[in-house]
View 1 (tube, rainbow, N blue to C red):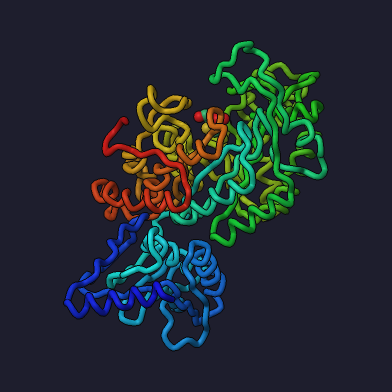
View 2: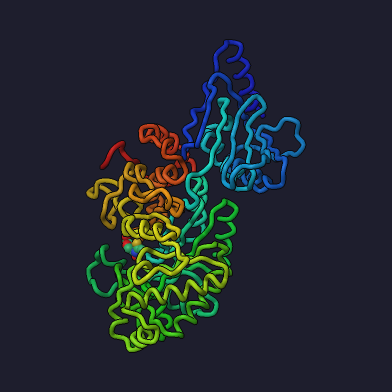
Length: 530
Ligand code: TNX
């Protein structure tokens, strides 16, 4: 109260002296579609703003904002039928699902939308404007009309190579939502660890989530593995908690269950699913393994049962089945695999992989879901309705889009956040490659060579974080931020709204916002290397 009084006094004094208190500079990221500012007039939100909404569609978002503000020291409250709320949520008709209008005038802050998603993004814009060092904001009059450029605005996290606890996953999602990302790609299984509880197959986590000490190297070599026993997994209860948490932040969680390759942890648990005699061990070194799922009926039944539990946990329309880096060495030698090739009249092991993926697609489709996989699923023939995640450059994505398949662009030349972002001599060990902040910023998910008629198949883009060399939550954040801040403009803002100079100026405020959220980030120099 005393603070409010002091502030009011200050404003009165300033007005009497005809000095305008400084208004907040709207350094909003991602840059909105359109923004008109009238710096001559301002509206002050003081420590205890009143929130109100005129439609039930805004309840959850109003509560989200209220809770957030209180968690960082504001004393906001929701009060319905308040004559003059400071922040009002107003339902308007006709805006697209994720669009919103945001304005500041004499009557306060207005967030207008037609959907819950729209209200939510209006709130994120407000949170971009609020200062981090005081509980009062002098907002210039403004009018923003905003909507995203792309439907798929994604970040991925590999929790197999290293495991990150639920609390951190929630923080990861919080930050995604803050930058208006809407898709969290959760890479849950790989050679080096199976991290999701599957009730029907308890050994997946009992055995498959634990790896032994690296064997090949007596001397610790971080390029090869951890040299230590390592483990961890999420229970189904934890997964549900994360999915609900994400849903409240308008983030869809897309689970990935790798097949037919990157399956060694599953084979260690259930050796009968491999083509060889076994036994297998959970991978202890990084890289690609020859042992993959064998295309036998038992394997298909297993995978369908696993996916059934996965679909019960994840409402996402898309289910990611991996498909990448599946060496055909073992299938070439396997009598079972060769028999399937003959029985199905297939040409080779690539067509066998295509057959494998097509069976999974039929199963997912029969359950109302869509398959998405890495671009290797193009080899040997793309499953009829599959979406493609293009990681080995953009060629796979272009080919898929031209064939009228949906595509998510995630080329390893621009979207691999496990690559270095600065001088390798001073940066923590990374997997190689160099993706600086400006490189991310200048990426365009629509390839220049794709003809316009097929642009609509590019759903959007996503950055991937593979964690072979990333063991701690702090390090994850360091690799993701601020590159994800740059990516948010790539996937949300219109190309003509993107401006590298302006973006760099906006970063100062973004660093403050990240500090306030206790995020570890890399301070990127203006150009190139640190
Ligand atoms: C390739 S990208 C992989 C991952 C590795 C990554 C390292 C992709 C679909 N597969 O298994 O972690 O390279 O950058």
